[in-house]
Length: 123
Image (cartoon, helix red, strand yellow):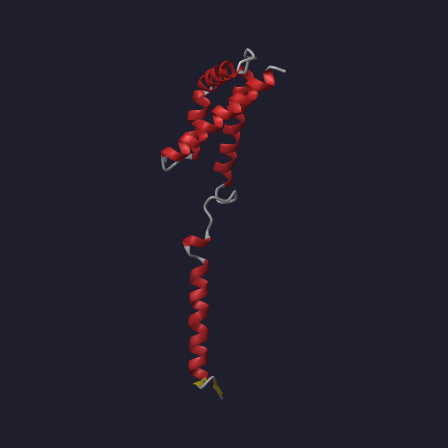
């Protein structure tokens, strides 16, 4: 029997090769998303705990600032600096490649959250 002008043996060989190629592609590194939550659950839980510890430190150290925005910014910076050990532990655990962009993003997030906690403390 001929399929598309190919013998049955040739058609089966093409089918086998395409199945093998698809199987290998499924195991390709591009298809294994390393950033998903399930890639390393123990490490991800550790990072979540470090985020909680950092946020708890920020909440504990946040104090009301005076009414001007420059005072809020300076108080928030002091609060984020007081939680630097927690932030550094978080960066070390979540930035295994030591990418400065990741470290700066986490520090910026810490500064932003410190500002929010200072603003909440004013209420």
